[in-house]
Length: 183
Image (cartoon, rainbow, N blue to C red; front, side, top):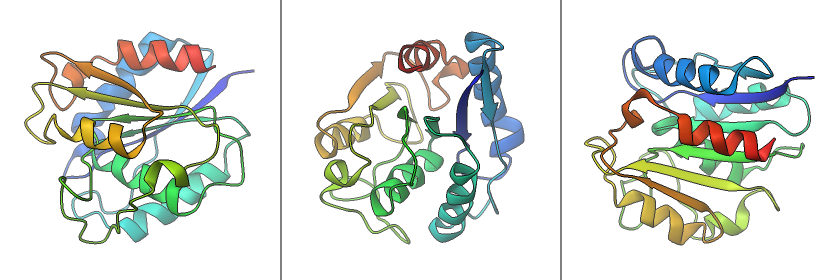
C-alpha cells in the first residue's frame, strides 16, 4: 500500500503550473512509486484567501486515509499550519512539513485574513511531527521567518538550507528524506 502525501501549492499567478509543479516533480523523483502524491489546484491562486484555501484543505484532507503526510509550500504552508491549529482534522497525521512558509504574526507578515495564534504549536494536532525548511537565499519569505516558526512551534525540526532560494532550488531531497523517515 502506498503512503499518501498531500502537497499544497503556494499562492500567486502561475504557482501551480509554473513553479510548485517542479517541487512536486522533485519530490516524486526522490520518493519513488511507493508514495501517492496528491497535488490539488487551490482556488484562485493569483488572489488566495484563507477561508477559500482552508475549505479546500479540509476537503482534501478528509479524502485521505489515516496517517497522511501534509506538505505546504510558501503561502500554502502558512495557510496549512494555521488551519490545522484552528481546526485539527479528525484523522491522525504522520507529519506536517512547511517549506519556505511566511510567518504571520509578531515579527512576521501581517495577517490580512489569517488571525495568528500565539499558541500555534500547542494548538496543532497532538504528537504530529512538524518539520520546517527554509533557504538562506529566499528573497520572497525572509529567512528569519523560520526562527519565528521555531519559537512558535518549539518541538519542530528545523532545516536551514544554506544558499537555497524560495523554491529550494527545485530540489526537495531533504524533504523526501524526512518523508521517508516519517513513513
